[in-house]
Length: 111
Image (cartoon, rainbow, N blue to C red; front, side, top):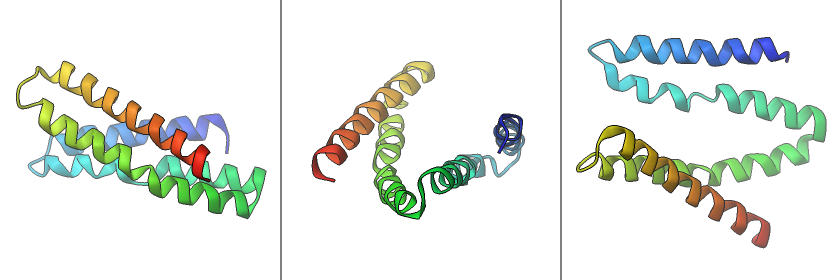
């Protein structure tokens, strides 16, 4: 896939999120980032360049990657109770980063 196609897909996702956030069903905007737009691209590239076995390994790692995302959501839910939104978002990203780092370290050690 060309770089322009990937960038266009990303831009379309952002537009869709923006449009949904303005509707009465604004919460659906939280579902859109979970559509596997970028996962489809990543999985296609891995399978094309490294083969099906590498894709299978990538898929297992991707399943574990749900944990850092959950930590991001849980920490953001907690932080918005007492922090300003930009600080809460930053704190949640830090939590995601720490969890992702631990996931990578654990994967390298046990896989």
